[in-house]
Length: 180
Length: 280
Image (cartoon, one colour):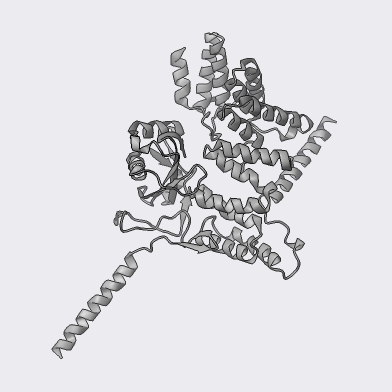
């Protein structure tokens, strides 16, 4: 009887752990391929949590109510200042020279006004997915993370959450354009 | 007589905008499809897209259903591409708009050209707009936000590709069209042509265009900056200083002034004006 009670307790603990994990772990992004038709199983503005690269304490208030921050989230001083700040931090390395294309850096601004869930995508000049040399994607992502000169629209006071992207066009491994 | 002309023009502009909107941004007339057909069902279902936020999962699912019902429905691919582009998912957005263009190039080439321009892909922008204007010759087509006629983007793209003369020619043709339909002229057309002339070192022509721009809208700060640069090139530093000061006042929002982002590298910032003033 005592043994049975011990087993029941263990069973309850395992079930509680499994339920807790299922509640608190967000699903990874998956792209549904319907005859190659790009579709996401979440709001396009949202970036799902990834245990491999995201801070688990970064809070999202409502993953179903994200807004595009293309116009609502801006860099103080505009494109020109952003380009200056990025190029000041960017150190060209010879292994980047072969890269001609784009690196898009995406991130979220949560309900507390904090940035997080940074992602990158490399593209060829024709906008097809590509692979950039060595650590260039991570290097660029690191630079964008260090920039904190952002402002967002007053809607943010109501806890509105945004997605934002910065697109960098490279020519021979040098940043040619910074596009907001 | 002048009043009746004005009323006619207003009526014409409203009609044109409605027609333009119906042709560019709408799902089309569902009654044109056979009753009960998949095309009709897709068209009718597509009207529900307005119920959902652009880019939401519900909106995506609905458009997927529409496309499944009618895989040849160009509008649905276009509509689905919009939030992808706006959120930096460029590869996916391009895949979708390419499908729309395969089906109806006359309607959707402008939209791809706009995103090419936005992403500083000037060669591709030129290719699309040359095709649009030489083959389909639309009456009037602007950027999705309505700021600029697409031939202005074509002109600017040619300037970036070191062929300003060709860009200027396209915008001159646009200005010719406006002679017949002056009500179609946009708020920044003279400013854009002024910039093209300026970059081609045709300063007298540039000055004329910038002066015309001030008669269209005397609150746009950037125009005064370029007028200052032209005066500076003519070594009229006193005049240049006055223009830069006006530009700065307008940029600071004084006397109703403003600046706006026309999404090119030619945008002017407060810092540029302050620098110009210091260098006089």
